[in-house]
Length: 409
Image 1: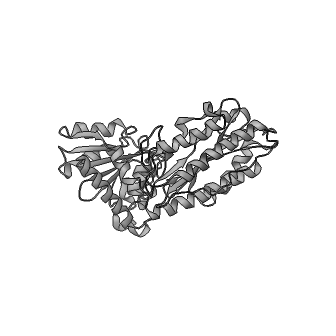
Image 2: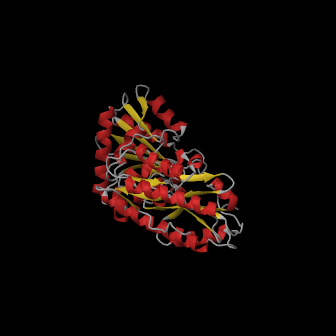
Image 3: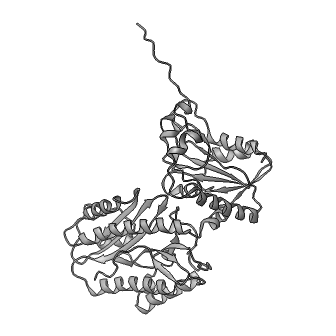
């Protein structure tokens, strides 16, 4: 016996997702004017690089920062592309579509009106490729022979790149990552307020974990306390790494059921995600009895951080700050354990972005620069001495955006 079923609407527009349908539900952390100012900054960099259009890629987690900054779209799964021409409206194409419904998939979080969904591969028989949306938009805008800048190209799926190169054989594709990052490296007052909120949330997690860092407590118990404290005021926990004893010298480890022993160095590195912005912070302390070597290593880590923070400010070269940190380590007798590539990194909607703090960087700091500062002593099989905060360069100096205690010994 056969049954007659209701004919179902299988289109993306089963729930309307056009601008008029979603603007009343719009959720963005900044006024639209902030995003328009960002577009203007990017276009200034495009003009300097003689770029006709940018193709900006985003993927879930730490790979969505550039898309989030320009569009506020959250890529939950799959891939997103924002196409930003040198003039005129932007376009967003994404296959981060849950249930084949854009309105179930964060499109009400973007101010960009032209949203073109594709099917998430594996959810339908013949998925619609977002690379085709990109190609179609470039064709519509008569950009067939354009100079196309790729942002996030290291992780951009080949199908998207191929759609551009095969569909637009006259186009030239170039790496535009640094040009885009230059446009976003100076944080606006609104961004700084968001980052400060995230810093306070991260500090709460650090304090909760440090309060439990004593002999007999497990790494997992400290992690649970940190998660609870941070989750109260953030979108989600970006990472929480806690390691005690000799394995703390390996630094980046997820917590286990191992109990902290008396005299163990305890390393904790954690961060949150809030309204598109990441934090990355660290503390090291000693549980129970503090031995001479533990005290020296911890004090060296703190002294390096404080010396660099005191010297940082507008017009200061990063390489000169690195010399200060290394000098502190040398004077303390731990120069051989100073970790040159662990000095720090710019941070914002990406976990690492401009300003560049790479070893011997010639970056000159400017007001509005925000970075994670983490000069470190690392001793394999023993532990480490490192303090890491988000730091803001102001008009007159520098200040920490992570209000958690440091001197705990």
